Amino acid sequence: MNTRWNSSERRQDGVAKMKRRRLFVTALHRKQRLPCAFAAAVAVVTCTGCGFTSGQLLYLFGVGRAGIAKAQFRLTEEPLLILLDDPNGRLDWPPAGTYFVDELAQRLIKNKAAKKIIPRQTLDGIRRTLPSFEKRGCREIGELTGAEQVLWVRVREFLANELILDTSQAAYFSVAVKVINVKETQRSRVRLWPASPAGHFITVAMNGSEVASEKTKAAIARAIAGKLADHVAKLFYDYRLGDFENAK
Image (tube, rainbow, N blue to C red):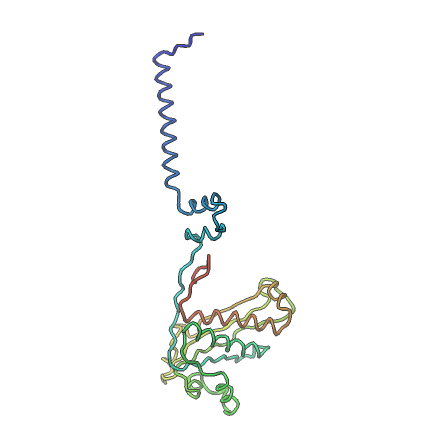
């Protein structure tokens, strides 16, 4: 067998080698252009024994790191009244309403969304001594308590029961939220926020396993009221979103 290559064969072999070099160089460039998220993932796989968990390493590289959610409205620094209104009697466990108002007040003060809140006991005293209390408007009630603004929360739906009918929404609390200017007497200008006359709707829910872990109606009502208080309070101050959480 003749092992010598002719000139044509040598040219073909040379072309083949050049193509292989080009493919190698192209692949190398592509590796250098890999996105940071992939580099972070590689670090998670290869950085064994470096003292970080995989989740911590991903967070350091910015994967899943969220931003800041801005307040939808800024409340006054003057006295604020939190008024929970249940005109249709949907709140069948009254202690849940009390807990909601107290929790909301604490969260607003803690996060500096409000400076002074009218004590719930002040409103309760006026409600007991004023015969026509239920006929008074929201702005007028605020004026009677010495508030400058009223954070008016109207109950739309409420369910807190040991009997689980829906595993995805075994308990829920739905409200409409408005901010009222007590100093404004012209009805068309009383509402400060939101633009919609119906108010800003918020609904929080607990799934079947969450409800089952609370066991009693009192505990379920307390848990769902606390969850609602957290969501309502966050309408009025800036807060850092949790990992992988998106602003709405």
